Structure formats: structure tokens, C-alpha cells
Image (tube, rainbow, N blue to C red; front, top):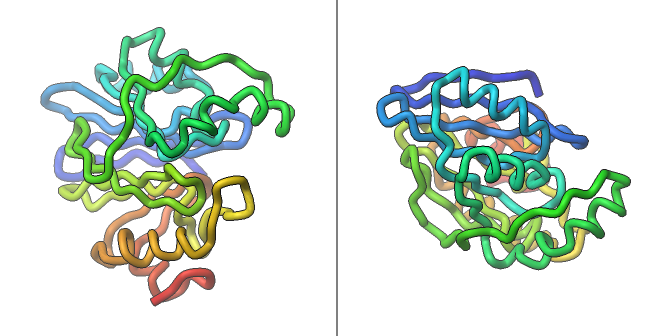
Length: 216
């Protein structure tokens, strides 16, 4: 996915691919308070820190859509550099604790991570008006993050452009991800922009009517 920079309704939003599997990392900032969150720091911590500095933002929360290695690898470096807290849904604790095995399976260098500071709850509010939506199926603890005022959804690996997250990994389940998408995401307005975990952005409307895996 090419780098995307958006300023909508005064929300600073920038997303770019990071890490060995090119996960889309998102930086969301409040231009008034200068507080920011980072979603899915899957690698390239220095690039993330430089982007925060360019926007003159203070990182306060590091939040994760799920705990697959390509979405979490730089969390420890960011926490060490900024003091920001790490957030994860508790249902993905097992995957977080299995990072070394995940890295071995994908032949990715392993660096230990600190434990998450807080467990994400469904409908929990974060900085920059973000709200967590528990969307299990790709993993048991998969979460999407909704920024209502900006009509932006960070969907992680739950929903892709014309595709959905894999359900053949441990903890994945097709019926569960289908329910999450239909009942939690497709209820959003058609013009909501969806930032996916990998690859290009899309909209809720496009996926509702054109996604071959889950449609209405």
C-alpha cells in the first residue's frame, strides 16, 4: 500500500506499510492536544517515530488490531522511546505470548516484547476519538478501530479490499469473522473509508456489495 496522508475534520491520519510483511501501520493524531495513537506497529520503529516527530505529535497509546507478529513487532521499541502504553484484546494474549514461535515459523528475527499494559474492551474509547469494535474471526481478539467524526475505520486483518482475513490460522473461524463483518462493520455508512491491515484502502459500501467472501 502506498503511503496515505489524510487530514479530515482536523484529524491527522497517516498510514504506511511497515515490517517484514508490510502491515499497514496507522498514526492518528489530534492537532490541538498533539496527542497520538499508533495502530499496529509491525516494524520500522524509527520510521514511525520520525513520522510522529514530523507531525509534532506525542504518542500516548499503542493499540493493536490483533497479535500476529506482523502487527506487533515494533511495539516494544515504541514504548521504550515514548513511554506510551500498549493495548491488546485479552483473547489474543496467547498469540502475543507465542511471538517467538510465530517468528520462527515465518523466519523473522525475534525480539522480545513487554506484556501489554491494558486489555482492550469492546466499545472502549481511545485518544483521538477512536472506539474499539471487537471483530473476532481472523483471531479471537481481533479488533477494528472506528473514528466516527472522520468516517475512518482501521480494520486490521478482518476486512480487505475484496477479501477478508484468513481463518485457517489457529483461533480463526469463518462463521465468526462473517458475523463480525456483517453485524459490526457493514452497519457503518457506505462512504466510510476502510484502512485494511495490508494492501489498498476501500469503503464499507464497496465491500458490502462487491466482496466475494462476505456480502449483503
